[in-house]
Length: 165
Image 1 (cartoon, rainbow, N blue to C red):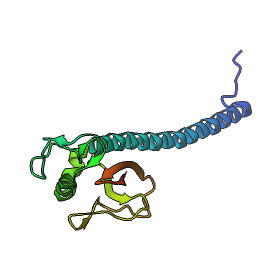
Image 2 (cartoon, rainbow, N blue to C red):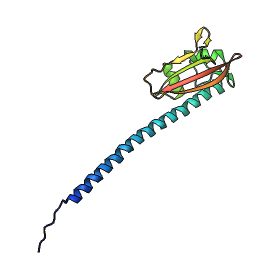
Image 3 (spheres, one colour):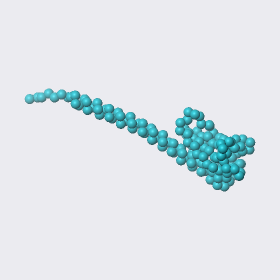
Image 4 (cartoon, helix red, strand yellow):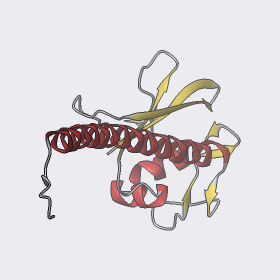
């Protein structure tokens, strides 16, 4: 009356193997697309942050309006919309790298800032090139750069800010 059945049949083992292979493939591709998505999200977040920073730099005089490297709360480099002020550029160059990162709210990133003419040649203010920060190495994979056209005296120049992790 008692019938003995087989606990594991060949069909059951085959279906488990197929299931495990399919599940492994799904997990593998999920991880690939998740890491790509996260990298793209981080890049877009950094791009948005740099656009906000460049807007602050070229559209407002900063807080306080006559700021210097010791009392600055918000960095602004212009006297009026997109017209650079030499004194503010000099003060900006004197703000420490770490304090600048904090004021820009990009503590987790490295950045490089420079102002060049439309041909890419460096511009000087008070005898020094207008550049600040760590120059990105060739190994950096995800560098985001924002360029803005501004006036420096009567000349159009390019304000460029780059950041990476």
